[in-house]
Length: 123
Image (spheres, rainbow, N blue to C red):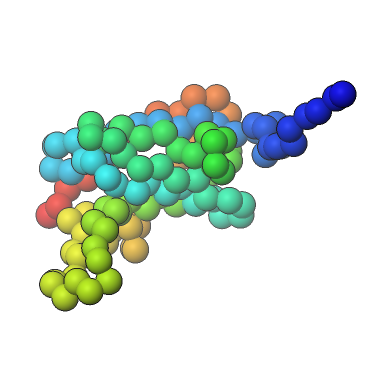
């Protein structure tokens, strides 16, 4: 009896560049930031920073990386999870809009290893 598991491998998505880095806000490592690299055409890649502000982009599910080329980069904070009955103040992202909704950030991803650190300021 022969059996196999169908799935997608790294090769199914073409050539990707590995993208890692660190996010800091006012000189301090920034945890729980959502980092998104969006190419002009194609699929965006995202990551969530760890406690030290480190990230590694994920293209889809368990496939890490980003498409080669120019990307607009957005960085925002993952809002805390709250119950539907929560009536308190709305979440205000400590990261300024110039890094997310009106991002001024861009980077060029190349095949191979790419390291992009983002030193954000709240002012």
